[in-house]
Length: 208
Image (cartoon, rainbow, N blue to C red; front, side):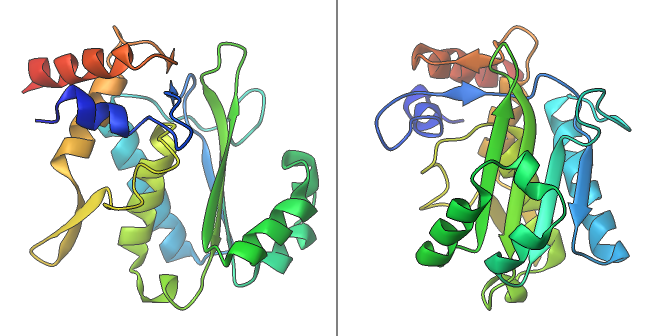
């Protein structure tokens, strides 16, 4: 079981601030730039993580249509060519320049509702030589986990949320426990104080 310090680390940002948020509405995913089998893998992984959280998915979002958009590309310069993406993602060109400068292969943007719960997420994945060696199952599960909550910007820099078990990629049990506890109805959708981590750890203990 993770203690409160380990839980707090997952939501403590590089500047020392604590910030937690979960989805405040059902997820409606759409994936661009992949074939039909990969699309099915991604939607299956998202559904599995949403089910773990005891949250919900829907066919459409009344405000946005789709609220979890995943874009695959071979080069960041492809993004400005996507119709209307600049309307969804302000300052798209400067973002592309930053991603190219950092040689990044993935990036996530979250949008929030009036209560500061997550209302949308945009995931951008550039299939560089490293990601081309990663299976669709692993990539899909990783992205599903990293979009189900607003994790710290350094939460998974040293340790992946996934683990290999008998040649199969699975969600690490302690991360699964955090996700389940985070979506407990008694927990808030948003938190800015590290005392929230103590409550999360306590919920994890109850769920054992």
